[in-house]
Image 1 (cartoon, one colour):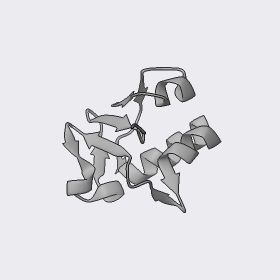
Image 2: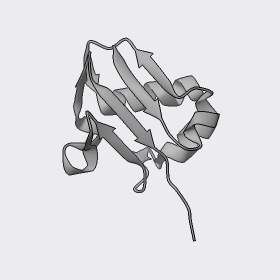
Image 3: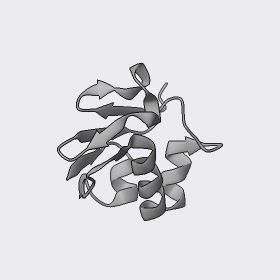
Image 4: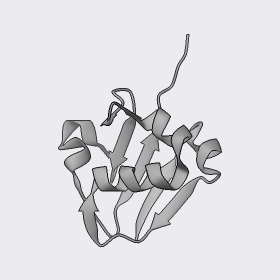
Length: 91
């Protein structure tokens, strides 16, 4: 199982704070694609743009920001924890 935790307005979109998903081994990109299908257009609009992850989305894999690694090509496996922070606007 992989634990996915949602923050900010992603909690309203998904209706939950976290998911436990059954994955043996895959990539973060496959996980995001699956979540896009599961939660639909509101989730996709926040997460992706032109088929790529939005620049200001923060995803932590086991506490480490994936932007400093392989991004969506990061391997994920059972026992991993993924934290997803959507874009935040402020002023």
